[in-house]
Length: 244
Image (cartoon, rainbow, N blue to C red; front, side, top):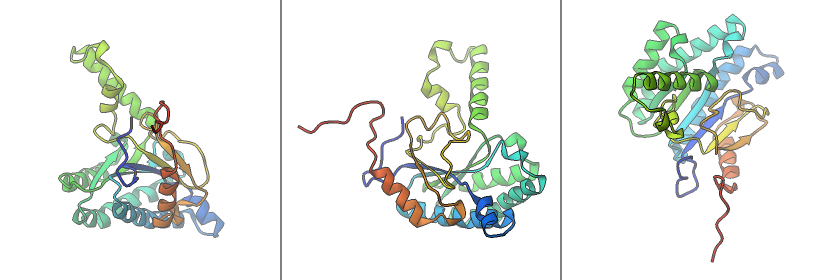
């Protein structure tokens, strides 16, 4: 289950599906790349707002394993945006005591980009403030498959007995091992689906879907989503406690 909520009602872990960059640009007669650029600005606003609110973990779905099917020019642009983000933002995040992490299949990344990601993680590894988790080249089914393969190999090697495989063991072998499960998932852009994002981890997550496109997101919309989250009755399969 998810980690307990902080005393003031702030979710410990917020996951976001950053959707709507292309539609935001198209509706304004702009190229899709303009939407992605504005999406990076929204990311910066959101990271600052999450830190101010006191969120412990912020996980952002920035590039899915299915996004490789997009036009090659758009894929190249998205990869370059990640490079720029690492070059221009990681030092500031480090100064703010933010730990940067990446989940997803790194084998699919070009060597230089993979090195940049690993260097950003190494630089911020000892930071004990908010954890910023970037889901890049990420797909939840692929993540679960990788975890199952590792567990199966350990069983074959005699390191794990089949009877010792529990949900906790599986969770520890996921890309998010060691992190609390999301308390709140926000999806922008009006769609209402998970799109292969954190399927295992969101078993008891509260969902908030908002119509606004990701380039419009920031402190105000994040605050509204958290306000909606605070109104939820989280029972985790149980019943609401009754006062005496």
